[in-house]
Image 1 (tube, rainbow, N blue to C red):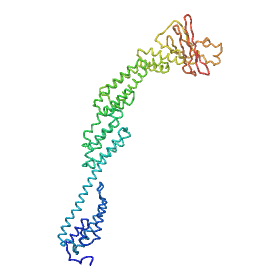
Image 2: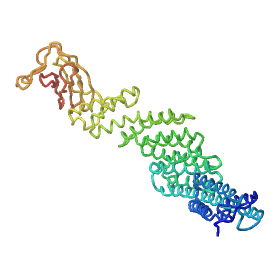
Image 3: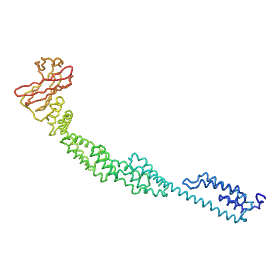
Image 4: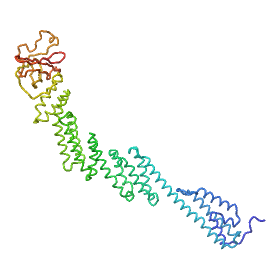
Length: 505
């Protein structure tokens, strides 16, 4: 038998019917014209497409594959039309019925395409929901970590939220972003909920930048959510630093005053600073005077820094700074007394000298001068510092101090009375050799010269003298301890020894 029926008269309707049947992707046009190999080829092409396309995913079918498959369908339709033009159909015998069948079967690829598009859309939705879930999990996994460690994850999650609402605004995932964002804010701000206010400053500051990354409608009321919390954190952190003596309180209060000038927390700054000044003032006069003075001086400086950085509405900070400065200056006297009594004579001298220079009319200035002199003497003769000097003056014992030295000499003395004076250099005097001073016949101030001198009236008791050279080659102070008794006239002599560079009596 022949492999195919003899050619039939040309029939355009039949050709169109075969072409339409081939467009279904099943090669039915070839089936009705007995072209089984070509029909199988259509099945293979369609099967390959289905294997690659199913199950539907968010990426869809590769465009190149679709183009190739569409081209194959068009070629199959064109070739089918050519074959059907002169080939009788196996069934149905009449072309109009085959044409109708071809039109009906076109619904198969069309319906399949629509179903696939729906499946792909669902796959896209699921992929977006998965991205949202991953971002939420990233935020949740950072619970308990420091903000500096977790910041990268927070920014990555925020980037996902931004992409979802910007690139897929109608997706189910985008509709869930506001809820995720509320959890996000809550997680980032966890240190605030734990009242770890200093730690909370950085994450809350970061949260104030989030509204700039997302549409306003997505952020909603969260836009202002960090403000009050950040203001509270800045104040509480600043207050803690102020109480602990941490210098960072100026930065915290400054940021608060600049960022939230009208906030209730800002109005509490000046009273907090004022309270710190009052607390430090209470320490002046006791055993902690020096610490209190140092704290007051630092407060004066730091308050000035705060005023410069953030202003001073109402002048309350200026008032607190003024009181801190005055109290610190006044307390310097008590600090010097404390240092003297504790045997820290060097610092006591420096403190009292500074106090005397800065307080020309203070009621304690005269005694501060005496304490500074006694402290300098005690650095050479420690026994001189056993008692705090008074402002007493004068006495019944004459003590003449002469200068047998080519250098000016400052004489310091303390005991029942305290004072100092300077003797001019002796014009015809010289420095003695050290060997001279070791001889039994050595007697300074005994040359009959007109030595520069001064006579003091001192009380009975022990007086400590220090002769301090001014200029010249001598650098080491000489000292003497004189136990003064009634009925005697005493002489002190200052001289300079050569080689050791010292002056002594």
